[in-house]
Image (cartoon, rainbow, N blue to C red):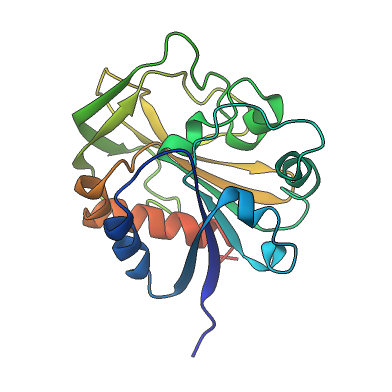
Length: 217
């Protein structure tokens, strides 16, 4: 049997449907997804670097304090190996104003006084990169989701995969990039089970994990 891709799934500072989210992760049969608080993950020196992918589903607003374990992890570990990074939904709002995280996610404007969220929005997802390994053979689809009034992914090196015409939030909702040695996949969708249960969303997220792990190499 082929060894499963080991995925650390980081959570903190934002509620979510725990059972439905876990059910979705368990459906990725070629992945072993281990959900854990980010503050414990960064302290777990024994296992921290053994994951092929780190999926961020936390929302830590503030830049980590100088000298903290979290900051040292961000500065000294991310991108130093081929460990992939997936930033899902509210993880895009993390570390507002911190330039290092901007380099990781490719998105400069992650909030501020103008930030608004809009729940139960109809989000038509248009596949803008139909030949990319994450989106290949996926047709346009629609989900009911939460949207964010933040900036668009604006950093050099972004490859836009999915767009939407919903005017309540960012229009470019999925993209890939590289941060040093790491593949990074960002996806603005993923609020609750209305999205977790959607077959196309699951396919995109699953493929994003595989791509971040370098499974297509």
